[in-house]
Image (cartoon, rainbow, N blue to C red):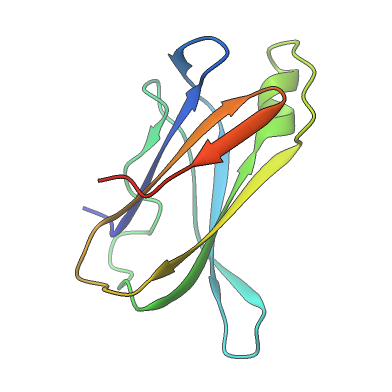
Length: 114
């Protein structure tokens, strides 16, 4: 299992958000970001392994960016947020880090999942 996973739910429909593209990046020593993984949510709105197999999870700051604009546009829905970016910190690389995203066309929220 990947050390980082996500689950995207469309709260306006009460359904998983299948087909949302996401990019995972890690903060570099100079303060920039380096892409280390990407994926698209499955029919249940999940990406079980955002961190590619064989890539070790280490302590540090990570960023998940979700492409919401194209996803809403493909459904004919206007949205205020073309993307959602969630920055989080991995303190214990031995733990699994689940980063859910709850979205609607005009808002989103996240939390540390299990």
